[in-house]
Amino acid sequence: MEESPIRLVERLGELQQIIKEKPQDYSCPFVLSTIHASKGLEYDAVYLLDVIDGILPA
Image (cartoon, rainbow, N blue to C red):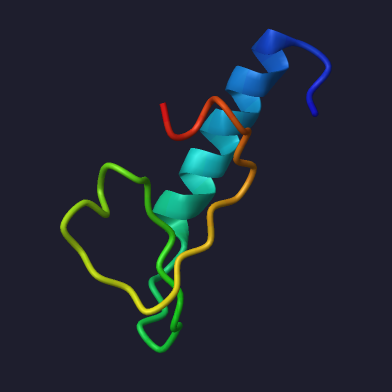
């Protein structure tokens, strides 16, 4: 948890840069995706993290 909204935005920018610079590991069996990006795709197992009852699904 960040100490302020400004620091949260800064941290999101830092994480975005890390993701852009990291080379892809095609041997990794995991796919991190948004719900919208995964529409129409089929997976053997799906894990939803940080889901709040009554918020998701809307």
